[in-house]
Every structure is written in C-alpha cells, then in structure tokens.
Image (tube, rainbow, N blue to C red; front, side, top):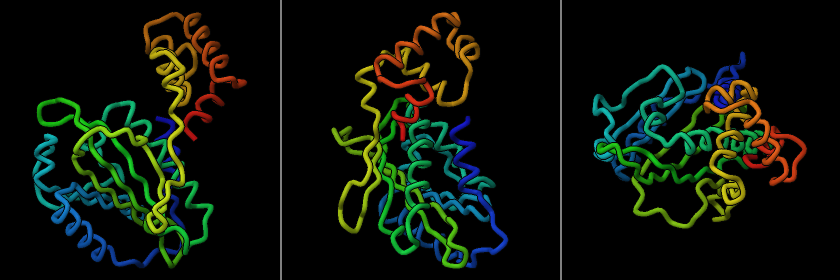
Length: 245
C-alpha cells in the first residue's frame, strides 16, 4: 500500500546519531496504561523497528490472541490489530498518521508533546462483528537527535458511536481540536466513486482499478470524471489529497 510505505519511510528514517532514551521506562508506562485503563497498548520503537504489545482482558473481546505480555514483534506495525480493522478505517488511519507526522515534524521540539491523535475505528470482535474502538496515539521524540523515537497507541472498546469526527488531532494541553478529518466527501460521492478514489490514492492505474473492481476501464474513466466534477478539482490524485490531507 503506497500510503503505508510512505509512512514507514518517514517513521523509520534512521540517522547516524542514535537516540539514547531508555526503552524500559516507556515499556513500563505502556504496561501501566494497559492495566489501569483495560486497554490494549502498543509501544513501537522506530530505531529498532520493533513493537511491544500489552493486552488487557479487552483483547479477548476483540478475539486477539492472549500470549505473553508484552508480545514483542519485529515491526512497527501491529498486524494482528490492523487486520481486525475495517478496510476503510485502516486506510484512514494510515493517512491521518502521516498527516500527524508532517504536522509535528514542522514544529519545534518543545511544542510536540502537546499533541495527540484521537480516532474512532471499527474493529471485528470475537464474534466477527464490528465494534467501535477508541484509538489514541502519542509520539515521543528523541532529545538526542530530534527524531521520532517512539509511538504509543492505546485501543479501548468504545461505549458508543458518537457523532464526533472519526479522526482528530488535538492539543491535549489546551483541550482544542487542531485538525478534523476531511472525509465529508462521503456525502458527495457514491460508494463506487469512493472505491475508485481510494485506489487512485494508493497509486493504482485505471486498468488496475478496473481489474480490481471487475468493471471496464471506460467505467473507471467515467467514475474518475464524475469525481473531478463533484469535488471541483483538476485531477483524481488532487481529489484524494484534498479529501485526506
């Protein structure tokens, strides 16, 4: 997936000057959050390209395996969690995290700790039914090289699907929403046009999209033209960017 690859390149941007933060301190914090909140907490180390997953009893409700805590995985991507997510929400998660990274990367170091991501995601539970899950994410930057060192994610089963935006970047100190998602185009485009737009954003050509959706290339072209007209943009790639960034 093009978006995920782009995000990985940003997150795993290794530098010669290493971060000397003590990972054990942050692993202990992740454990405490998991225990106190009944959350699934994931601590991802960008320098080592590893993650540590701490599972509470909520993990069983989502049908996740209950092994050692933490479960250590050799990637920054918590694949077991990601596979549970609704495909639309998984894509939005990647896009929104890329937006979050770019926002913080443009800030001064001392400002970054004030910001986090709050998301509302559909995930399959132990009965293979979608449940609403609250997802929060925090970035921890290195004081040694100013690069992103750790990402800390919390997953909690949500009480309900409120009317709040699905994805927000918030200033936790001021209690302000900095960025809301721009996915209101769902009220403008048809379900098929949304599918086409997602594939355009992932870098697929019209012929590939036609094959994936089992429709003709002429139909794909018509959908792309409709997207341009409805969203009043010059091309489909710009439509994707305007919708997600």
